[in-house]
Amino acid sequence: MRTTPRRLALLLITALGFGCGKDLDDERIPIEDVPPAVLKAAKDKLPDVTFDAAYRETFEGKQVYEVRGKTKAGKTREVEVNDKGEVVNVE
View (cartoon, rainbow, N blue to C red):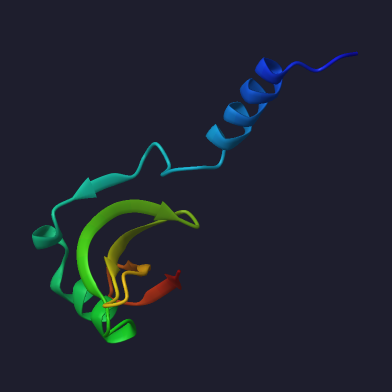
């Protein structure tokens, strides 16, 4: 069977579409609406990051906040914090 470039492109687009991006139930929220305990935990964990975006999402079956920002060098960092202010994941 001969594979055409169009088929390869379609396969690549389909493969990249699955597993990329945010979950459908993630909700972007203003950084000002992030609970203070969550923002404090994020800043304590990644003190060199300026946070500018937040999402309310589900992580391992529980609601968490994903707080995103950039370092001075421009690297994007993310920290996921539960409602209690406990860091559950860092990327």
